[in-house]
Figure 1 (cartoon, rainbow over the protein chains, first blue to last red):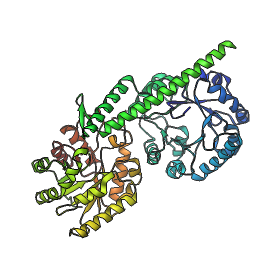
Figure 2 (figure 1 turned 90 degrees about the vertical axis):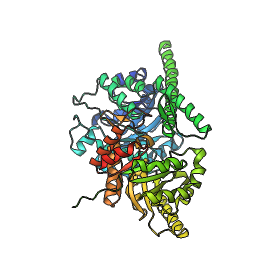
Figure 3 (figure 1 turned 45 degrees about the vertical axis):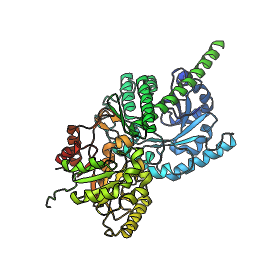
Figure 4 (figure 1 turned 120 degrees about the vertical axis):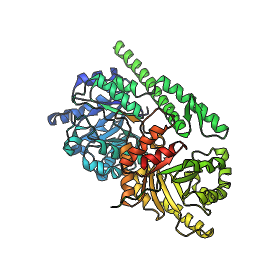
Length: 314
Length: 241
């Protein structure tokens, strides 16, 4: 299953059976099996040993699986993280091309040993420091592995590194977010984006905040978001897909622009709106994304039905 | 420091395939006339626009201080050939991305100046950033040819598909404008751009929204911008005045 559709990527704790066993029923596009911040040092070893079975459990509902490893334990973590069924490795606090290259080489070796097509697993650098943000270009061009850019803003680690207050009513992360986003966009690399929605309460478990976040991301044209609480899954999964009205409009725009092009024209109007190459591109983007979301939803629905049937028969 | 009156506030886009519309530009008093071979020229009229350019550049050049020609990125070489005639003040290059592209276009201009008896080195290059790659390389692009006199930001909300954010701005817009401004100022180029705010998609900019965008652009350090419609010229002159 393509893992391009990641409207909601939620962190789960492999050492907590309550989270892992229920994940498949919650409808997330992606679950991130965490060996990093949600796992206490004394639990790391047990967590590593649980990753392989957690992949099977958490993906039963059609979700893609990522694994977040530890910056200080890249060598120790990767042999427990690179398995068939893992779509992406998330590498926290990345700051240099050398770090990316190191992880890439280990992943390549493990892919070979474990019968995974070489280069299949994506590597995602998490940008969580000033140095990582400044070095974004070298980080994203460090090796030929498929890269997905992550971060630059909103995170706790970035706040600590920069010495800023995380929950403010203005956008503290504007520069690093924009710089990292531009670096990724300039290379044609997809990125998990962020839009600043004031949240001075500091809570991350409120679904009305989730709806606001989803609306803001959707309006801004961002397709991918992370989540820390299950209350965010449904608002993001439904909120980041195009609406029926948007799809209908996009189809009309494409049809109208095709008609213009056939007549050798390039600018027209539809319901009083200007239709041109920009609106055409935007509409095409909406339709592509709608198709990708629909495919992911169908895949999840089939997987869910299978898993439910298996559950009943047991 | 003495205040210098900025002579290039409004850059009026004129469809090059429509000589009548082009000649009417005087009524609106733009600081710069930009004969367009890009957005405003439909595919079926592109050849006509190119072939009529030599005469049009000369004609507009008599009455208008600055005649520029905006080329199309994909066909810029042929477009520049069609534009380089007596009266031309400069070329507008939309969407440059790499240093080498700008150097190369500068060299083509040099060759054409020589071939056609135009003043060597006099033709200016205006770079309009439209893509992430262009913004990433902004300073390098502005250094790529001595001909570059201005660095601009167009409607990147459209070209880069930047949607609105809750703060009443387009995503990344302020950062990208500042990036272009810094590149322009550190190299002594004219910064072109206005601070457009989100409206409804497919809407046409009003005089009011244009004046506001120009005023905010001026406050951010920009000194002029492009006008897509004649009605915008007065608003832009006022906003940057």
